[in-house]
Amino acid sequence: MVKKKILVMTDHMPWGHRSIARAIYGFLKTKEKEENFEVYYAEVKSEMGISNDIYQFSYRYLPLSSRIGRWMSYLPQIRKVIEELSFTNLSAPKKVVQKIKPDLVISTYWFHSHSLAGWKDRGDVNFKLWTVVADPWTVLPVSYNSKIDMHLVYDQMGVDVGMKECGIPKNKILETGWWTRPEMFGKFDRKEARKKLGFSDDRQVVFVGGGSLGTNSLTKLLPALMLIKGKVGFIFNTGTDKLAYNLVEQYTRLYKKLNKQGNVIIKNLGWIENMGEVLAGVDIVFGKAGPNFLFDGQLPILEGKKTET
Image (cartoon, rainbow, N blue to C red):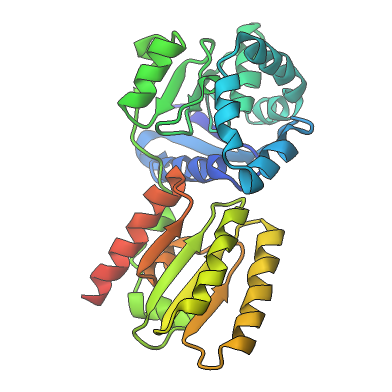
């Protein structure tokens, strides 16, 4: 029997779309032999011009601007512009598809989904196209496209938005729950995780995170650390935001000079690869309430607690 090929595709940026793609790919990889298919994974740079730079800037420094972007995404004029831009983006994802020749493409990045949908609609290729609606409740209408075969959504909210606001038939929407990376289900030893982080006592450890891109708003917490008298540990995760990382570094040096008691231990980790292990060693998680942050984060903490008791 010929094996079917599944291609999981996402953008090259380290944001939630990539985490979701890795979660789906990781799960499907465990089912290859059982289901007799082959799974491939591709991170493909999107061609959106200055749009990515604008998005990253507003995400980090003007988070409230996302409301404007969501409102604008409902405008027919914006949808038309997106469709036109998606043709200029097609070249890179098209090359990957032509090389692998998959029977099914699962795209976790909405812009690639639009590009592939337009190509598929012209009748040049014959593969099934599924897309992931990568927001649980603040769902953007650009995540839906009537030319796509299936939309994977978190819960009934995604179903309702797709059907009622975007006119997608029910048979093109699949409610799957959230897509969590396999490594977040690891069995982590809490004491060992804390030891690796540099905490040898029983102090409370607070994880402060701003998502993969980072956010400047987290640094507003720094002055309050001067007021803490008890022994506490803080872990800062600033993602790829170098400005936020440098601000935490500067504050840490200042704190050590002004507070000789050293009651507060600050660990500035920047970008974190072993997120599951890090979270297993903390007591409190504080930060941007993004979906991957919430769904991924609760698993290691619970597992870490279990291994201690």
